[in-house]
Image (tube, rainbow, N blue to C red; front, side, top):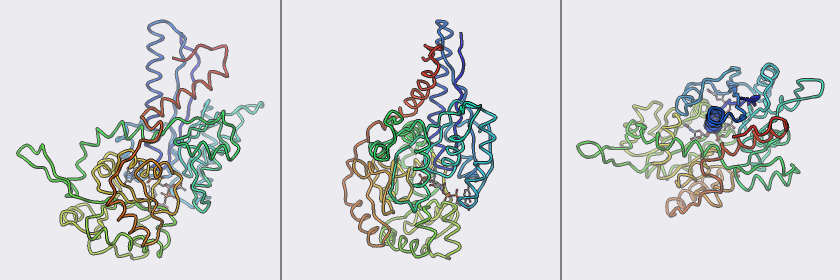
Length: 425
Ligand code: UD1
Ligand code: UDP
């Protein structure tokens, strides 16, 4: 006999959301498979989960959104808001208005938001004030990647993190600093669950598939050797991403960073998949990224084969990016997620920021905080190029974070329905 279903609605919107959500959907599917088996085999009572995927449309280019659905085996969104770009207020408000209608129609038991983008805070805030009936019933708000703090409130993401955490009912933490931060802010410990990192779940799941990527060949970075091409030689290259407004929206800051990369660029090619925000600024500021600045992959191939300077390419898909990270000599970035992925892969990472909300990547991982001055970046690169990397894997970064999250969600749902127990498998 099958009991009532738990209904979960999950939000995605921007590039770093897709790889955090994919393992949660896979864990839900796995739960449902086990529930079906239990019912078929023993007639046991077992609750299924009905899942609804909602895309806000914050990111919309194929290479910032669509490609991740095929790379990560994500289902097509059930609802697409199509909000697109805008100022912080306009984008957040548009998502809020549309999401209120969606959540009232769907009436889920839980809403899952991930990370720190505008889509995250908008949907969490709407859910916190929803009332399905006169009793004020609303969905449980689950925040995946809770508790991270850069302590820099000029970052839009820091505001999004704080607000989202303070309206959430279940807070899923990726590293120990998250526990400390939430405790300091007075969030009751029974709401907080240290489950690990779903972005790392994705990395561990998909790194094998990423071996089939041909991006290195396309960029002239790998040569196949031997008659069957079964051996290969990978060139020494660095991989760069930059998109934080503080780094790229101000001409002087951006130029300082480029100056800090010059020495490295005279030694090896620096592959730079350019985020759309950054592409716009490069054009607007008329920045000269050196003799080797190209904008398409065929020119990039010739440049990287000849071996120098910053090589601009379009953003790349998830599997291609995993392959580029795994084979890089060094990664330079201002991305949040890439600091974590390089720690997991054991690749030296130079973070071009004054702070990080992910201190575990510096304490146990492969990350160095370089700051954003020319000299700071140059020094960090020199240190990383001499360092023998001995990284430790942070606690619970073991590929099982999503399963832990689904387990907590189901228990919290079942605990409110004592008459239905036992409903779990
Ligand atoms: C957003 C997140 C940031 C995250 C980043 C990941 C917020 C406040 N910021 O920053 O935390 O690290 O995504 O990539 O939520 N654009 C396109 N095509 C797209 C998407 C954007 O051309 O598919 C351009 C538009 O000109 C847009 C600009 O990029 O105005 C910025 O996009 P937006 O989503 O506002 O912020 P991001 O910088 O991408
Ligand atoms: N990523 C990607 N292609 C790229 C750059 C990044 O697939 O060209 C992936 C990267 O592996 C990580 C995620 O995007 O999984 C990080 O997203 P981003 O840097 O945009 O956001 P942040 O983590 O800074 O919020």
